[in-house]
Length: 247
Image (cartoon, rainbow, N blue to C red; front, side):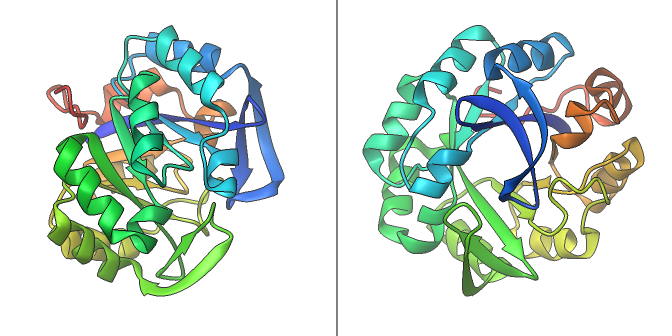
């Protein structure tokens, strides 16, 4: 398993939200590039970046901040938020991302996802964000009637090789991951699944590893110092693991 630190960007600043609520900022860490440098110095081998404004508006918004972040580190960076056209995906790669994460588009535009997978292959990951087992889109503001596990099967059939699964109810809470839902997702997907949402302790990371997650995205617990990234990497990360397209 790989430990993946998160950098969520809102209005150009690194922040954390509670359960994806844009009105509930729990932590602010200022310059996203500086935060990425810290994660890199602590040993990160992949950094997960979310353009929160982009996810909400359906187009890339914090492009300058993402570009500066990618230029600030040699660690591979995956980018999500507002990637709903081939041009926007291409621009994320041009800004320095090694992987693009498609969320809303994965549910609403199978044609785009298929084309992106055909063109970029493993450089495309699918983000499946679920509330009570059902997929949410548009920056988690829109609910759907699609079960997260059903979407996983569909995107894998289209060629997806990596899924980033977020349990929205746990995100930013430090209350621990939703392990039963994660196990269902791993069984349904049959491809590597990176878990996100609820990590608040080293024991949570150990449980994710035991559950079969190929990676764990950690945000708020790193922001507020509940977890040390260097310690987490030493404790649970496999020496030869690196779930990114450059491995």
